[in-house]
Image (tube, rainbow, N blue to C red):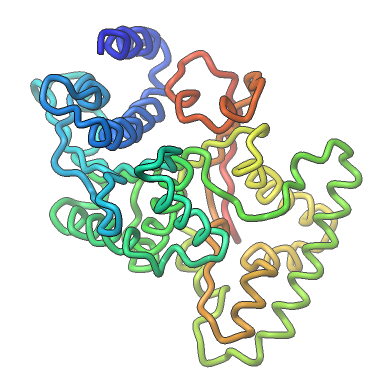
Length: 339
């Protein structure tokens, strides 16, 4: 417990000199609170023995409720309410009233089976059909109805980022835009970004864009009665989630190429092809051709993409949540808008 407190105090002191990173760090710590809450449950740590509370109490949040999976009774998320000491507290500025945070996969025997099943659902574009997402979506809708959307944050890491992405997308389609922090969000694709040869990498992306756009055009006439991907993208374009990715993490690094490739195709004079390709995936198109609903999570029209360029010696560090509350990162941020 003392180690957690010392770590939080160290980062809080550093953050005072880098307030632009404060929101990212707070969101990451609240997601960590959801992780540790589940570990507390697994190890039967309660009351003063629990390790989780410092992760939210240090930033003056209170735990309103845990989100519990009905399949294995695991804690997969948390709802926090901001409780500043006074309205004059400097931390009140730009702070949300509520934060809904979702953890990622925990590799323990108590939770791995259900978490792993959900990971598979992400790959199969089926997360929206799971009971865990249904619970998460109801929680988000209830919080938004109780407070204005401008007073609510969504945050998640890895699997939790996928849940937050889908919840944020659904709310955006209903006209409600929520500030969203996505740490190492999954991008289901071949890890093209890991290819070192730039020409080979660009060649693969160009070929993929033309193939995806061609398949999309060919299948379009068969689904006129349904809402088209272009309609969905138009509804989502005003929602700008904050994505935090590491180029050494193959789970999320494809977001870098996904957004940069749009600009590259515009310069080549084939932006129309890419605009069609960027709102579809080959896997999603095949599922749609079979009459199945498919809305791949990684298809985002707009985003504020932050890349951690600090050294990451292994995958555990590159995919870890802990990197995002550090104040001494070498970060590069860029905003992308569809249209």
